[in-house]
Image 1: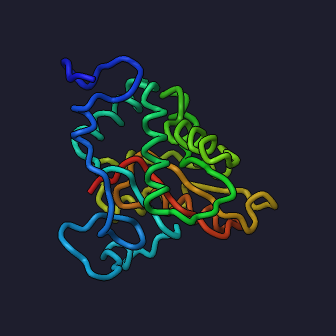
Image 2: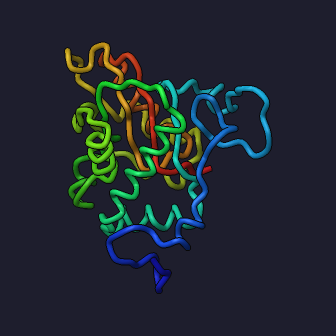
Length: 223
């Protein structure tokens, strides 16, 4: 796939070697809670300052790639220019992230971070739902699209501070309590994680509805 004009262009299929060479995967060392990568070396498990201060509701979060130029351009094309041929490539990223960071995890279902209904209608799809349904098929697990819903339209998080992000998504999500969620372990999927405010708010709603645990996997981590 080659750079041409604005954004990325390419035919459906595997990424070219140039694209793959520009991707940076995330491994250890990273925060034991949110998976934020640490530059340098760590000889023991640690929790980053942000997680220590905010105590995210999810049990653990991990991301496949750093949100660098190549990953950012690919995800932007997927979300805003309907480059849906990237879906299977992205599901590969999520599956590899699971294999590396959650080798022994047992989950009951896979669910996406929801969009507000009006925003999903504007875009035509929820990118997290496309990713979650693909991963659920790969894992042979149920896909619970409506396990959690966004009940309040929120401002885009892109230009907000960490404190503003927490406030912006507070009480923005709701999950219905019931036998389907009670005692279950859920894998929550989104495209990009920054501070974890959105995924934490979703996880809190799921746990308030009875979920036993919520683990998060995203395509990329933005710092």
